[in-house]
Amino acid sequence: MSDHTLPSTSPAVFISGSLSITSLPAPVIARIEAILERRLPVLIGDARGADRTVQRFLCERNIDAVEVYCSGEGPRNNLGQWPTRNIPSSGPKGTGAYHTPKDKAMASYASCGFVIWDGRSRGSLANIHRLAARRCFILIWFGPEERFVTLRSDSDRDSFLEAHPCRNL
Image 1 (cartoon, rainbow, N blue to C red):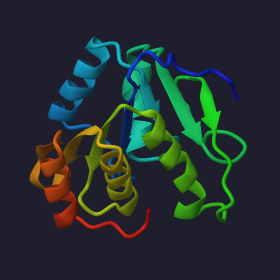
Image 2 (cartoon, rainbow, N blue to C red; image 1 turned 135 degrees about the vertical axis):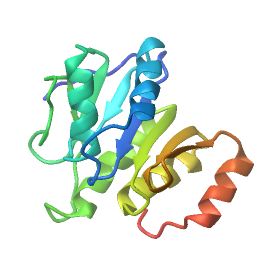
Image 3 (cartoon, rainbow, N blue to C red; image 1 turned 120 degrees about the vertical axis):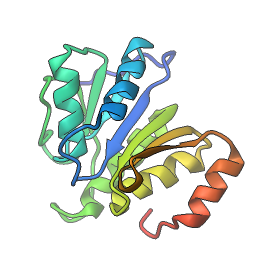
Image 4 (cartoon, helix red, strand yellow; image 1 turned 180 degrees about the vertical axis):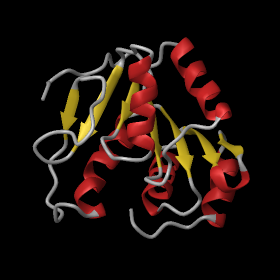
């Protein structure tokens, strides 16, 4: 565990996604590469699925500006041995409630978000809602339709949130 914090002057991107995501489509890879070209720090969780898949991608490219957020005693996945931020949780271990505080922390520290969503994951949808509540720019890969959804204005965010309500914030 590290006390490392990313520079506050750099906008950080919160990359999250669904547990069902185990490979990255070419358009998603291109967007992550664009994030890396801009040298934006990445905040990412420690779950299987999209978190581990994106971590593998970042690790294979020797990306250093990554911080892994976790609950509990240490990260379940930290493929690049990056600095970690442990967020305390009072939720029952192994439940969504246990991991919610770390997701809330990443959404609060990030300046924008990239969500790789399978269209079903309540956790990914909750992250979209958290980022939208802060009026962040959010790029969503909407897997069921294999397309990007961009939420950059209040109107974009409001329309998306009305169409996709979330009950587990």
